[in-house]
Image (cartoon, rainbow, N blue to C red; front, side, top):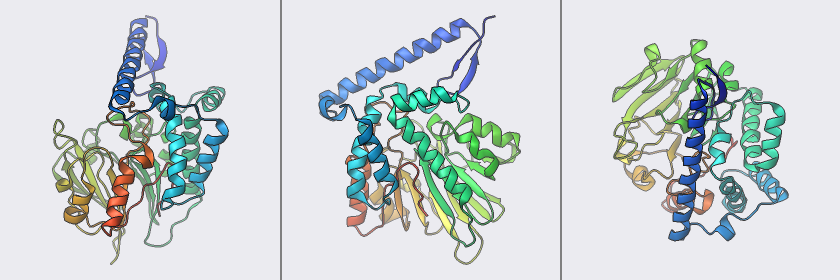
Length: 360
């Protein structure tokens, strides 16, 4: 039987068993393009998308200047970053549905192909540049105190390094496999392709490293209970089940990760795609809280009722796999800006990180 190499629906390299499968992939691609077209038309009709403004061409010089602004400012430099993110978002939207496949492209793709994509699609330059930046800083950083080093990679992916170990949460990036030798364990909030990377998972499992999730049968690390706690070295991971939306009840696992076992451990709370503030159940006062900015989660209710975090970080913005439409989140001009502003006005500490940011 003829075998044709291609990409699966998440863009991972696979062998398609027949030409029929290859043609089916083409039909799926055409379907996605049609869905994008419908979403764009709907957004235009609703007035949430102005083609002349939001889809205007972005000169390379303007895009590179925007990236430089993001790399030389902090996650609290709202005004400077807002302008840069507007440029970035316009370039992302101009990619159309192709961004879904490009973001999941195999990490073994030829260098000349990657270079061509970087030249044609500037957001992919930043996508890979941000990963390389985090990867370099991660390897160059030595943690000696109780406070870990924390990076925001992409979508809801964060990378953490403590004085005893390193781990990732919801790591999704085409180059993610490069992290496998450096991580002690991996946490995945739920079984949606924008929250994990197959190659990274397979590499971690091949090395007998823990991968904690609510869907992978990974021996002692499977977590489908409503409440469960794991301990790895001096890291304690409290897991709880939460709703993704009304159609996916308790489909998400939230993670409260306590780094260290001294008197003042550093705590990170990551709620994946949890949509309900009353499903957030920290045992203490988290130092960092990462939550989905566009799933319906009420950050203000969370801050005042269930999530006493020291710093709120709305993420899941500029995610390349979602089409223009309902779930598209436009940088600082949309939900993250509203969330950050309202929390700050109420006296809470909040900021929106961008790809490649070091949080701590």
